[in-house]
Length: 462
Image 1: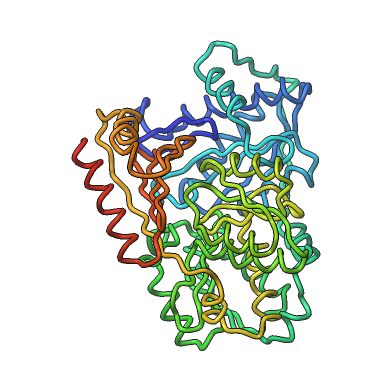
Image 2 (image 1 turned 135 degrees about the vertical axis):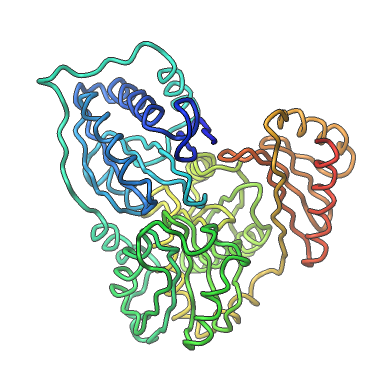
């Protein structure tokens, strides 16, 4: 069983022995360390912490441990229970809390769960803060509350407030969406999207809604990562229902994939490209940010609109930091993660859906026609699973050393090599014992061949 401790939280599989996986002991230990950090950071003896979760089957168990531990540390808890990650992020600010914990393993399979940690701005904690929490978790410095100082629990929700904020966001045109009389399908992989997406789509005035896998049981109907090979059912449903568009979200609803009217994938990379191009057009330009593994198309549309594009290291906290530095209008990640600072600094599929429907309604085009209007690049995303004894850092160092003269190299996050018409990015995953390989090229064949070549190189090292 696996347990991964990182600066952004703790993630693991459920079950096994006392020193394995995400079990009640490791969950309580890490939660207590976070609570003690928040006490110091906020300067309050009784901090207020928001707790939300996706619909994973282990969620109720993990939530009870987290809330009980927070109470034991003297924290007051706002329990919003089943909630999307962006909803939880916004609730931290809306509820005037000092921090938040999101119980979700994002796109990982159902046996995984995780604690994702937020600061008082509803943003993921920084590298230095994460390291301090990890240190506290392994120390003897944790101090629990006396019986008269135990924390309390408030049951609440924040979905309505989140949707209301989305409807008021610049670029969201509810009247245009209503007039378009859209038919929309969606796949929420039996998680919290089954609660959030119908509420959003109804508020936007979508005429017909056809849900798929919308029962929030946590028993995922397919691999929850929204990649084309996992989206065959929604592709068929979109085509058969004659829908204008289909939307797919991951279990915690911070990633958005789009299906066109023919049942074909729009491309996760182009979720951010389309929305950014739309907002840049409305505002007359602006800056954008995405991570090193994202498509060049965002750079192209940004420069075409007179703005500046900047690349950040992979990881939402890195993208957000760069967005603040460059005062970016819009940013995110090529995995379908849209970050719209006007709303909040977090990936948010709900605002992504609202902005894309506004674009679709006002463009007069079909989704497939919109896709053809953007620069054409093709990506391949592969992985190399690592045996337990392998030093992944040493693998990447060897790769950088042996490929030093093959192209323009960037080492701020793994190894990225830019060639004249294509690029490859090889990096360690922050959440799994794997190395990820991303490539992009003018054709799918070239992208796949480039990824295959670097996968073969890494495999030979192992």
